[in-house]
Length: 290
Image (cartoon, rainbow, N blue to C red; front, top):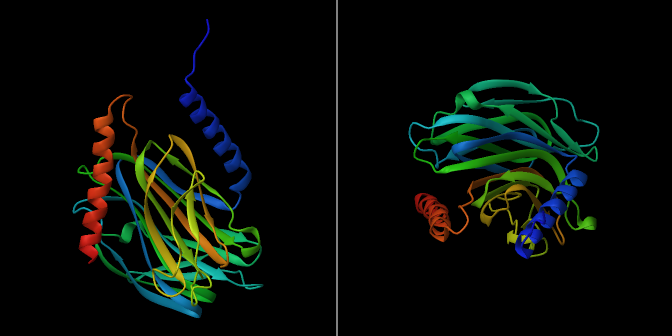
């Protein structure tokens, strides 16, 4: 029996195979923090610091969580640039001493990433005080929260953490692989030590599956740190994210992908509705933050 495969399907299959091979080669410095399906979503928030030594502190605000939502996972993230002073770092969140943590990842014995589980301390939207100690050269803290609620559409959240230097000489690396249901979604990235002095260090591109989906990283969280939430179209299964930098060197610590289910073949209306859900939710978030 001969199986006929359309040219469009063949292209998709080949693209997925290529993405898988690329991911297998480039993901050594990323760890999966969480992945789950259901009526689920993701928010990443944080604050910036200008190369803090010793202690760093600030407030982190959450604004997207529906009332009554269940918190699946919440993680506090810190990066530290240092040579010879890896060791442990301490943290306090919402008045709770989180203790000392060993590095969860390291790049080139220079950039370290630390993480603390704060799931029990997230009670919904609001402002949370956060601090970390023992830092050598820190550019702020980030909070990643995965939550679910019956009012949310069915989707998937895939969340990775790492210590990844985006070097000038290599034009941006490495990739990270995030899983998707194949529908429209949102790509989140958190970086530290990015800057833009008189336009010299601008021009970064956030890419998903080879296509430019956003940027630049010009300290939009505050001087020296950025969080971007980008509307994207995804492929079912593995999706490869990367950041290309023409002139700046910085650290990439969080990559998260929230995706909706791909519509059934031929159901163009469902595709439009799914895209509308993403658009309406993003518009509501921007209005709330205005």
